[in-house]
Length: 595
Image 1 (cartoon, helix red, strand yellow):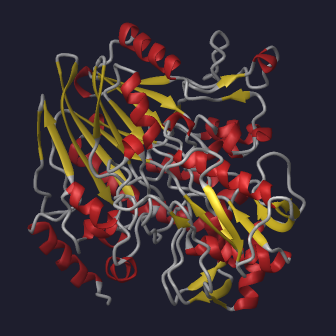
Image 2 (spheres, rainbow, N blue to C red; image 1 turned 90 degrees about the vertical axis):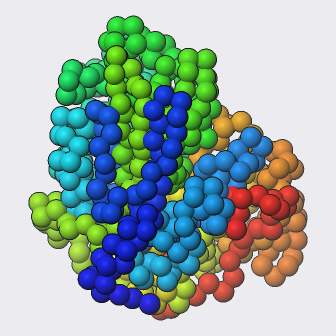
């Protein structure tokens, strides 16, 4: 099913009139909370209060509109069972009161994804996003609005890789980002990271990034204005923004705490990271005492579960604008702590959403809030001319490579989900086939765009799944026990009952291997019944040939993974998923985080 632009606008108008758009909104004044009908115009946000904070996160360098399928598996266990963000499909719609079959249902869930995507079109795109940001600034007041970027912005595409993130720095400057923090920004070399941060016109903040003691004596970036020699913080922990009416907004940065563990520490040898919630409390207390802000928020790349725990332990924060786990959550979670309440939000990924938090600030404190998470549909927003021209010019040197047609897909290709995605399977199949391996392993990255059935897979699509600064592949012998240990370690990272031991990401993807997992058990006991595709059991002491990529420790010896996948697709011509190596999952019956 497909409709033209005029028909689409008419459909949107009817949906808006019926109160279906933009999906879900939350409003609170004092202790009274209520839901309000959506406006007739999808992007007409009614004014509330006197401060508006716009929030984007995890766009992963997607400058153009894309397709992105939300997960059908996002398991929550223990205290997280049945709570945002661990809801999918119909359970998600019911929890947030979203009507099935609407634009919002398509934006927030995987349901009927292919047909809905054909109807509603692509999402995101910086030219369309800039149009929305400029409109909101005009409607809500340019001197009353800030644009916050939660990070994972300067990585994730071919052009970001080739320009070392500089394409995105300029795009963010054009977009008007006021404050940001980071994660994948730190996967370039430290000199490149600092060069990008210096070129960024907004404030880069991170209270939890410190210079190591052995590097502080002769620190090579000591001239950077954000460095504090006394505290050894590498970047400003926070920034204060003066808004209309003299309202002071403090924005504290929380970079991804596990950057040197989840990504190569060799690129950034002088910096140390961590959750550091005690340091966060100290920073918040100092800001409250010395700066006297009317509003204090945290711009975080912790992941939503970690943010929820931090909000329960650290008081004095009005709201946490979260990222990292790519959860599009239409309404904030209100967390109680010893100092009062903290709102916790998460604004999805890939430029697909823009969060708008409006505060009613009076007598030096927040009295109420209104929140909307707006889906950014490119069919509904005219592209900003200046941004579109910039993107076009920036891409010109790379177009021949990006547009190379590799194969056609006969099914929906996607990545996001706890256990496997169809594009991940293509990568795993390519690693096995080209490397002559029995088993393949691929990281459980949550970034990566989707491709509809029947569409051509281009080199740009492959780069959208693989563009990292440590893309080298390997083929090596591994014992069966070592393979099990890898699966157990990643499963504990994903399903550990303590959010502070979770690093985000999804389960390592596998090719040529089936297994059973019980997420409710403890480390060492979750993974059982490991078998090759032919049914032969994996033996602990036996060696197997394993292909993979993205080694965090030392550089692998093989060619970049995108070359391996491209070689495979050119040969196949049609990308077919003959077998999806998804595990058998135990003890999740009734869990609203699985379809």
